[in-house]
Image 1 (tube, one colour):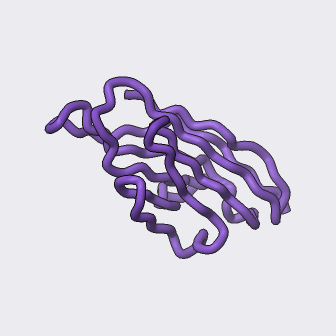
Image 2: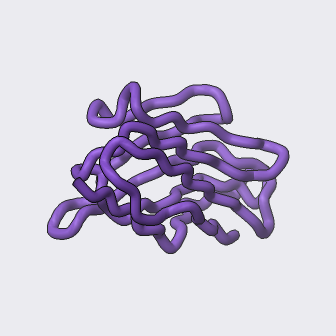
Length: 119
């Protein structure tokens, strides 16, 4: 299973970006997909997660600004980021809990995509 992120880049404060994460390979089902981020010198932190395509949770710092969504048919997840702040600058990682058959599940990470917000 591979997770490939796209959509990062440089944006001014107040701007928007949309990240995508596409899962491919041997996929029976996906339980949870989420976005994490890691800024220089800081620990990786949860940004947003969607479980079974319906239940969502967000970090307090992004509530009201970021929206996570998924396209189950395409095994793709999105993160719409609005009203970006310099504090959102980080490498954003896609994470997924993927079942390759009815009983074998593993946790996968993407390679990361850089988001830089200038003030």
